[in-house]
Image (cartoon, rainbow, N blue to C red; front, side, top):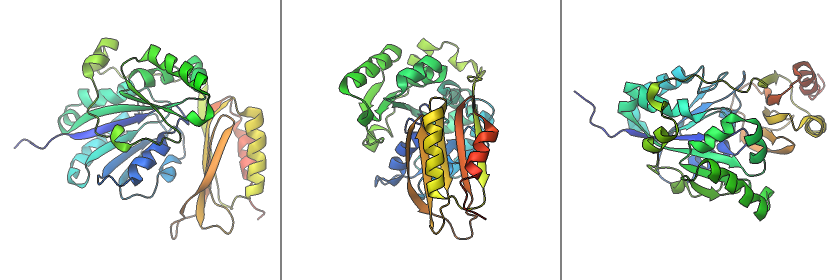
Length: 325
């Protein structure tokens, strides 16, 4: 007997490294909207950090590490979606958060070229979060940033608190030159009404085919900027916050232009809560998040994504931030 249930709506959440995707995702998961979502998170790096940065919600969260969702782990996405369809009564929709280095085209293709996925799900919209402060630089050095804008149904122009009105207008003009059709909303810290993001029924296959005639060919060949890579480290002893802050301040001052994204989950001595650290270039932020779970090893981990990364030096620096043994 064929499945007569309505397809499950899927929102693809994309945007370049550090634009504010996870902040938006957390807002979706914590607001009182009465809907439940399954969440698929993709990371670029050996160690998973984003899963720890997502709030402890009652949602099902699936994490795919060490590969971009539009490259090596696209098969994993299909398998996860297929598995979710076996318990689709548990949620109202699916949110796929891509790595900041993802080209959204192959991700969107998944919902049209795989017959099982096509039958059970519906691509509701592609939401792209844009860093108003750094977008101009990203468009100069990243093909992915342009593609993320081009495929968007909704563009969230985020971090408006970091730019002037003139700078914002200039960024909007660049966005409109790439994609004149998408709705554009300004925001700070990804604060936007959730009904503007979820349930939009906005994805237009006709518009995408006009831009990418080969979209439905199933060709998912995709190459990233070979200069961008990721290094990750994990340590067992607690992190001394003063040592870490001093090291990170110096590192971001000297290497901030090459560090596209830095994020970490830190265990501080005498503190039951995890400390989440994030930085985009030289702009850093951090705060305590949920407590360590009972019996969970309190290991600190950090991920750097950028260019010309000196793995040995970064490892030595992070390890030196531990409290004395």
